[in-house]
Structure formats: structure tokens, C-alpha cells
Image (cartoon, rainbow, N blue to C red; front, side):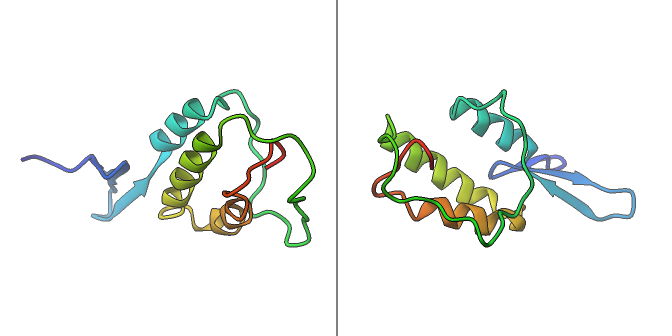
Length: 102
């Protein structure tokens, strides 16, 4: 069988002190490519709790299926990146009717 390197899209690396480091760096890069955002700039997380996201202003998202697929991938990403949970929850509220701003 051999040493574990990937498990369910989670990269596993053995550390020098016999621990395990679990990351999803490759998963994030693949997700950015899938969403057409590979050239985007990173932003700080979590989002400010005072941020208001408009539910009804703006153009309809061109591909709602893609939005839902990316949202599912982001929810899976919170396994190793707990600080994303609030931000992902905020934009997941718009899954039934996503807009470009979301």
C-alpha cells in the first residue's frame, strides 16, 4: 500500500515530529481554475461581521449550477480551513437565486 499522500482531496504530509499536516492547497488551486478565478487576488478571512450582501441587486449569475457546485466545494474546503466557514455560510444563503455580486 505505501505511505498516505492524498485522501479525499486532502494532502497528507508526515511532519518531522511524527505528526501529520493536512492541507487542501491543490484542491484550492483546482477550485479556482474550475471557477475561472485562477488570477484573482486573495483577501483576508473571515469577512467582517458587519458586511451586508444584497440579495436582490445586480445581474443574475450566468450559470447557477456552477455557483452551486463551487459552493459545495467551498463547504468541503472548510474541513481544513475553519476560518472560511462564516464567509462560505454568508454566500451560501444565495444558492437559490445567485447574483453576479455574490
